[in-house]
Length: 320
Image (cartoon, rainbow, N blue to C red; front, side, top):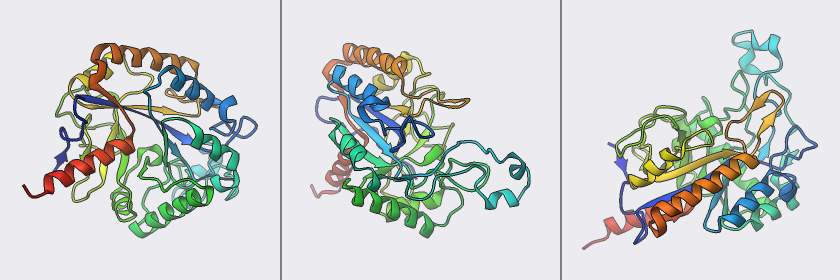
């Protein structure tokens, strides 16, 4: 049975909400395979810092990989990649040695991340890599206990780096198998940003049909069946039209804006990668949202929405 949370979680006077999240944050610098936050204010996070200066209400969830090891998102060992069964036993591209990008070894980057205003840090996997053809898809066929071990190790690296325990997870490449859902619940996480759908038409009863879990609410928080884990859908990105965002908010929904910190690696270009053009687009979009909805829109974060949902659930269970 589905539990769609289309009311009760918004603060008094608010009719809709906006969250903004960025994936793939790690200490990589421009001198590494790609810059993903390691150059701090001199890199792509500096663009975010400037956007937040222009938009003082904007909150951000940075999905951070605890010990990033991926170098290429696509197989570069092409001969091995053609051999069924055998290819699933190997990394089909060179990867970084374990610990190279561990947050615990980059205190200057962690200090910068924690200094950003109105910013929360959440999990984006442990290594962001997997054996076989789908390199970035970290969670695939692992059993629940293995998923818990991965989450526990990632949280331990957060702790060693001085980052408070993360409250949620954005699975790499949105792949969210049932074992991961159960593992997140058992590991004490409160939310999972599992799906991305930027194409399904907006309506109050629309469900996801693109990346990640299908059949989840497109615009409202929703509990995973049989779980207290809250699901969020990324429903807008750089390629989306402003009208889609306004439709989501007009329906009383949660607009979840998605971006990736890496814009380009060799021939690969992320359509929602952070650059000056995307930041300028967001600047204009947020101004239009504010002009349309005024004080009725809640600029918040996924963690804050999850807490509001929890509070609403607790109130519903309280005796009258």
